[in-house]
Amino acid sequence: MTRTRLILLAAGGSAALLAGAFFFQALGYAPCKLCLWQRWPHGAAILIGALALIIRLPLLAWLGALAAAATGGLGIYHTGVERGFWPGPDTCTSGGDIGNLTAAQLLEQINQAPLIRCDEVAWEFLSLSMASWNAILSFALAAIWIMAARKTR
Image (cartoon, rainbow, N blue to C red):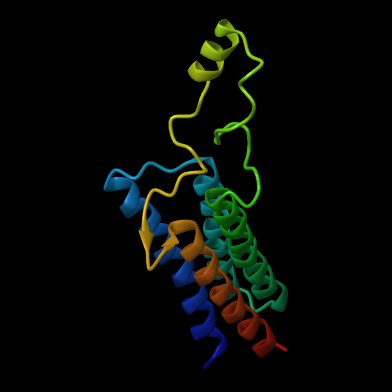
């Protein structure tokens, strides 16, 4: 496969994943903070792909691979938060010890709780959440970016 086709496939894959995220959002699956974080590297990969098609610079394909790997890493982190393997950001997860809180402190904590929690799986397919699928597919896209980068030598 040519360098151009690999870049189109990798950047197009990010565009498809980003479009899928917006599609699910349109269906009523509101994104949490970690979901939104995973979108930014896809946007970067799309822009990098457009530049890489114009400028034949190997660094751009490597940056595309980095962007895809970054969103893959965020997907793994988010999956771990969803599955309770590690804590997520305080601003979008539940938990903590509430036993020592006064009624006023507890009410304040409830009022400041996020509406969309990062530690709840909103949708699954084959027992994998959207974050898990994003990680798997993003690492595949990173591999395609790396193949494109190696073609420009």
